[in-house]
Image (tube, rainbow, N blue to C red):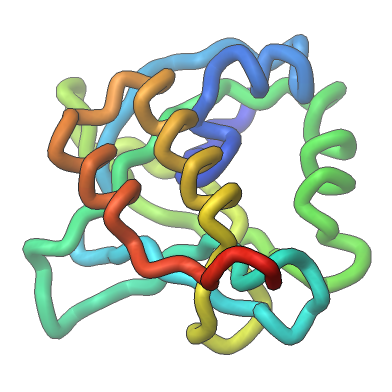
Length: 153
């Protein structure tokens, strides 16, 4: 098994149970010194897509993540979902702070420049996924307050 850190819609344990049925949720944690942002607006989806970036300028920044033990049977399915073959996302390794100490995990990050605004629908999906994973209320509220594209785009 390989430890995977989810930060966007894959935070939702019910959604991940559908996408990766052989891969149980292990727990949650934080990427410290990283921030959630958006990019890839030019790729043609409804607005920018979620990603994380390391932010050495402010080590207080944190991103809430869910940790899953990804079974080899699910890796290919998850790679397809994250458009690895098309080069939309790529995999990196990160250190996740958990109640059990630091855990090494891999995650997907967007292979595009930061910038642009996500759709309100997408931000809602991210906030609901974070809530389902047990993110603190202030984290979910901050997600819901993110700037979005005006409706009609």
